[in-house]
Image (cartoon, rainbow, N blue to C red):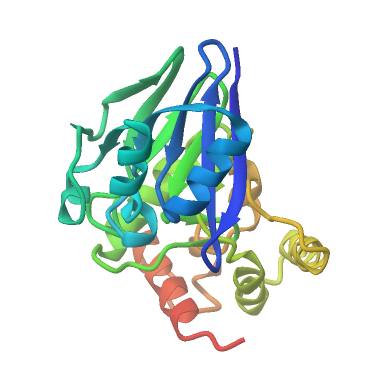
Length: 253
């Protein structure tokens, strides 16, 4: 039976994700950006929370762990780095499998935003929860990692099947679209940017996205194609990515 995803906005630009294995009714929260909001949504859904699945240690992803665990008894699962701010009941890393009822998540190492960042991939339902590694039309800043690590992580996600639904953790897409237009004149990018602006003007979410759409229009995945425009023609792919990331970091549009 499929995985049910309940998405809701919280904090200033985060998304919360409650997920339920329909076969068993067991539920999890992917990260804990806002404990009060997550607990309120749990009350609305009536779901029984079994797991907290952390992608990385940042407070807007693991800061609500203790409050939610106290309220629900859910077990906390995540990479070792989460211990910087909260205990873990189970530490997971590349190649591990996390089961939520009959739903199986493969743990993917996607460091760069933080060194130990992970993603959760449900291959059967073609769903990935990617935290702050990949965004719609963007990617996370490298607070701890280096360009070669981040590029490798993005390529791991880009290698998932095109139809994979990608749940990223922030509504950054309009800002990402404005940057994409500044470095990439591909018609598909322009069309997607307009669709994003239209959706946001209606108050609609631009998350989730898909791997196929990101391959086609995300400037960070398209970095090698954009290298000449950024003055790094012939550079290794990770260096082209670094140039795109540096351009975004200084972008004022």
